[in-house]
Each structure stands twice: as structure tokens, then as C-alpha cells.
Amino acid sequence: MLCIKQLQVGIISKLDFVIASSDIIALCGHSGSGKTTLLDAIAGYRDYQGHISIDGVNIDKYHPWQRPCRYLNQRLYLFPHLTVLANLHLAQYAAKQSKSDDACKMILKQVGIGHLADRYPWQISGGEQQRAALARVLISNPKLLLLDEPFSSLDWQLRMNLWQLVIDIQAQYSMTILLVTHEPKEASMLANHIYHLQQGNLFTE
Ligand SMILES: Nc1ncnc2c1ncn2[C@@H]1O[C@H](COP(=O)(O)OP(=O)(O)OP(=O)(O)O)[C@@H](O)[C@H]1O
Image 1 (cartoon, rainbow, N blue to C red):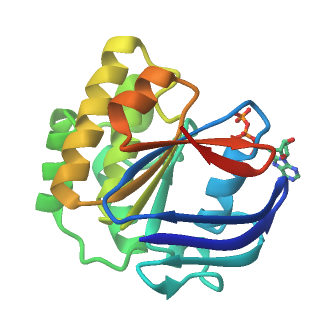
Image 2 (image 1 turned 180 degrees about the horizontal axis):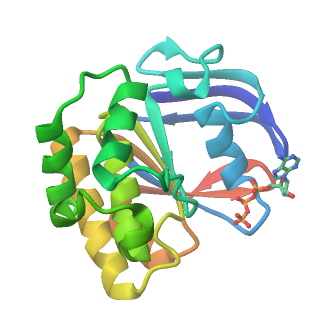
């Protein structure tokens, strides 16, 4: 469960918000309403006042890499000098997991790019890079996945494939997902609940 109390950061003022475990929440709102600001605070990329806890553990003092959540947006952050597989190994290392080729290859296969494990990011397409980035955030088995319009630059068919993939993976790993999107179809297909952020306040549909 994600629990946010009296959060103050940037445009967001005194926000209270709870997401039940294994829920998929879509966060909509006009440009500049504070969606990315909220995800940045949860991920620990921005200083904030108030309290954030995940599964009852307060994470306010945790560095981003110590938080049990992973963040995926349109910037892929794949290391260009490492192969796709080595990028996943590094994520395992950062999550203090032991290196497992089998686990990495299984996730790459699951996202449909098992055959590209030994390629470098610059040797694969944009959609394949997005899948590699998704595999990299999943390899550490986060409790909370923060998605900030990660697929919006991709074509519709690929986007729909990736939505289905997110639904399958969520069911398999019981992750809680907070998804920022401008796309009503994406919100209604993926989310159990849709929230709108308006001038730093949240409203349900
Ligand atoms: N690091 C920052 N420091 C100060 N202000 C910021 C910072 N990042 C964003 N802002 C401002 O805070 C407001 C909310 O920005 P944010 O990126 O959270 O909006 P958003 O809802 O994600 O918008 P979009 O849908 O366009 O991505 C904007 O007015 C923006 O200019």
C-alpha cells in the first residue's frame, strides 16, 4: 500500500492519498497540474514535506535507489555502453540482488526481446528500447511501479501490446502501479481507478 500524508512539493499542497496494494491507478490532469512532481516526490527525486510510506514503511529519508519503487518515463536511461542484458545485471546489482542470467533472460523474453539480450541500446529500435527499459525496472521486482507516460511516443499497436504486457506483469507480480497518462483509452484499459490532479488536488471520477 502507498500512503501519502500532507505532501507538499512544488504545486502540490497538503495532499493525502492512499493506493491499495496491487491497484493500478491512472493519474490524469492538464499539463502543469503536478503529475510528474508527485511521481518525482514518491521516487525521491525531489525534496518534499509530509510523509510517504510503502507497505507501512516510511521512506521519507530513503535515497531514490533505496525506495521499493521504480520509475519509468520516456527517458530511458539505458546505459549505451552496456548490452541490454548487462543493463539488467546492473539493475540487479543496484537492487542488491544476486546476478542471475536466467531471471534477466526470462524477463527479456516476457517483454518480447529475448533475442536482443546481447545488443547495445543503440542497435535496437525505440520500441525495443522501451521494452528493455521496462524489463530493467521489473527485474528488481518493485512493490510500486511509477509510469510517467512511458509509451506515448510509440505507435498505437505497440502501445496496446505494452499495455497488455503491463496488465499481465501486474497480475503476475502483484505490483501496485501509478500511471500518469493523457490518454483516456490508456487510463480506462489499464487502471482500476482514475484520478485527476487539478491545481495540486486529486479528484476521483
Ligand atoms: N524542478 C522544478 N522546480 C520548480 N518547478 C517545477 C519543477 N518541475 C516542474 N515545475 C513546475 O511545476 C508545475 C507542475 O509540473 P509537472 O511537471 O509536475 O506537471 P505535469 O502535470 O507532469 O505536466 P505535463 O503533463 O506537461 O508533463 C509546472 O508549472 C512546472 O513548470
